Every structure is written in C-alpha cells, then in structure tokens.
Amino acid sequence: MFKKLFSHTLIYGLAPQIPKVAQLFILPIITQDLTELDFGVAGIMTAYTSSIAVLAFLGLRVILVNSFYKSPSQYKWAWRQIYGFLTLWNLVYALLLGLLIYWVVPEIAYENRLLIMALNVAPLVLFGPVGNIGTTYYQLKQKPLAIGMRTMIFGVLTVILNLYFISYLKLGYMGWFWSNFIATILSNASYYYPVNFIFGLVPIFNFKWRLIKNSLKVSLPTVPHYYSTYLLNSSDKMVMDMVGVGVDKIGKYNAAYTVGNIFQQLGVAAGFAVAPMMTKKFREGNDKAARDLIFGLQFGFLVMTFLMSIWLKELFAFLLRSPGLAEMYSLGVVIVMSYNYRPMYMGSVNKLFFVEKTNIVWKVTFVAGLMNVILNLVFIPSFGFEMAAYTTFVSLMFMGYIGYFIPSIKKVNLVNYHPLKWLFLTLFLTLAAFYLADLPLGLKLIVTGGVLIITLMSGLFFKRKLTK
Image (tube, rainbow, N blue to C red):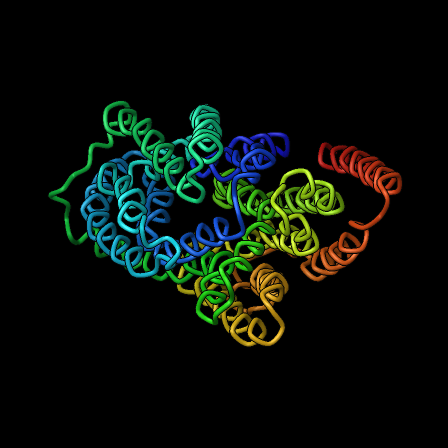
C-alpha cells in the first residue's frame, strides 16, 4: 500500500506543472543571464494570474471524482456535459485573464504587455479544460505513467527552451513565458486525442442545465477552498507589489521559493496519489487504513523537507548564481518546511469531499488564506518582505491542523490523527533545520546519515507492524 502511494506520488509529481520543477536543473546556467528584476516580473505576473486561476475549473473536479466512483456505469455522460460547459466557460475566463494581465503588467515590462497576455491566454482558447480532464481520468484509473511519460517529454523540452530563450536569445523574463506557453500547448495537445477519441469523452455542448446547476451547487462552495491555495502560496508577492516593495526585493523572495515550489508541487502530487486510495478505503469503511496512508505520507514529507532544508545553503549557492539571490537560503528553509502541512491537511478534509460536505471545507481553507493576506499587510510594511515567509508558515500550519479541532469535521473523521504530536514534531524540525543549515559540511553529513538510519529503521518497524 505505502509502496504504491509513494511511487504514485513521485510519478504524479511530474504532472503538467513540471516546467517549473525542471527549471531547477538549469538555474546555475540561466541565472547568470537573469537579474532580480527578471525574477520580480515573473513573480508578480504569477501572483496576479494565479489570483483568478481557480475560476478556470469552478471546482467541478469534485463532481468528476464523485461521479466516477458513485456512478461507474454512467459517469462519462456527466463528464462529457461538464467538459462541454467548461470549454465554453474557458473562453469567458480567457477574456478575464487577458484583461487582468494587461492591467497588472509591471511598468518595466510594458513593451511586452500584449505578448505576455497572448502567451497566457492562447492555451485556454485552443484547448480549454482538456488537460485537466485527461489528468483527472488517468489519476482515477490509477495510471500515473500516462502522466509521467508526458511529463518527462515536456520537462526536457522546457529545459531546452529555457536554455534557448534565456541563455542563447537573452530574453530575460520573457524566456519563461515563451517556454511555459510552448510546453503548455503541447501538453494539452497530447491529451486531446485520448480524451476525445479513446476515452469517448467528446464534449456535449447542448448540455442539460439541470445537471450543470446541481453540479455547481456542490462545486462552487469549493472555489473559496481552492482559492485559498492562491492566498497562501502566491498572494504574498501581490501584497508586496501593492504595498510598494521593490521589484528587485520581490525577485529575491521569488528566488527563495525556488526549492519551496518543488515541495508545493510534490504536495499537489501527493494529493493526486493519495486521494483515490483514501476514497477507496472510505468506501470500504476502513478509515484507519486511510489514516495510515496519511501517517506514512507525513513521515516521508518530514524526512525529505528536513534533509533538503539543512542543505539549502549549499544548494542555493550552486543554483542561484546571480548576486544577492543565494543569500535567501534562510527564508528558503522556512518556506520548504511550511509545506509539511499538506499530508495532515489532506487527512482532515478528504473525508469531507467523499461525503460531499464541501460547505465545511472552504471555511477552513479560506480563513487560512485570508489570515495570510492580513498578516502580510500588517507585517511586510513594518518589518520587510522577509516576513512573508513566516506568515506563510503560520497560515499553512493553521490550515493543516485546525480541521482536527472543529466539531463538525471531527464528527466525520472517525479515527484519531494525533494532530498535536505531528504539529509539535514539525515545529521542532523546522527550528532545528533553521540552525543546522549553517553547520559545517562534516557535521551536516553526520546529521544526514543519522536521519537516514532512523528513517530506514522506522520504515522496517512499521512494515512489520502493518503485516501482522
């Protein structure tokens, strides 16, 4: 069970957003041709475009998942109508996105404003939701290799394109926009044929409004929930822009997220992997087995993030060759460790999605996101842009654990997840990693070896326990 969970998590980690992850491997080369302003423009544009990204799918993925499990013989009929509705809706969304981009492009990038708008909008107009439909289908069929193969191809392509546009053509921040545009177009195109012709999911544009309305009644309450992802992960850069933080400092903060973005994507990948497994256990009435999946995932995240964090100083020095960026490693530690919230968060809310109590989920996640924005507005003007890393950590921990103390959620989750123990362990390891990052290399090697030995022994112990 755990072997399948971790293998699927790693494969799903190479999902359509892999261009951002693949970029890590060429940073030592391309950062020589990038400045803090390039990172700043990219960070600001990502923050603003992400601010409405949740509207692209309107939360309807929960309907796709539930219909797949609850109506296995008729789900395609519902999927095709939702596909048709979302295809038309994406044209409206593309118009909204284009207007937003035109309005918020930083002054330093005015000369490329129309081009940036076109590169972001074109994939939506050409392919609509087909990438999300295809990814969801493969995920629910538990066929991660279908996603992984695409990811490997487009990941390599993105690396080549970044090298070409940034280091050869010297396009600066525009190199990222061009690379992501080409990779997104080809990724969506690769899903078009199987979705429409192999899976038989040709969109129905003459959809039944009753089905769409009933679906939106369930899905729309999840929109604030999904919007919280933006409020927690990207809004900080928008707040910095609003309160007058310089583009160069925003660029430094964006660089500090270099490794954090990987764990953010890994958290999303873990959700893809664990959700169908937990749903199956919930359907069988085996909530304890579902909880064990979360425990295994949480343990794995703590080990990976802790080891990565203590080596961030050396990693940043290697990856970020532009002056002033490598010194951001201390913020990187806080950001990386903050993404340990993800497994326990999934443990608290996945059962709610299964029983379709989505009106509870958004209250937890949206409050956490709103708290992050308010804390940023309060602390960044007084204490500097660095505070955004700490407010993000506090807000993510709140979102990951508060659900275990809300009576209506506790009533749905039938087993004890021991949230306080996991929270205190996360806080302890974060504080330890923050100081261990400055240790000499020899001591870091000793600490790393000790952690790996403890991890191996713990894995063998729990394997024997589970097989009894």
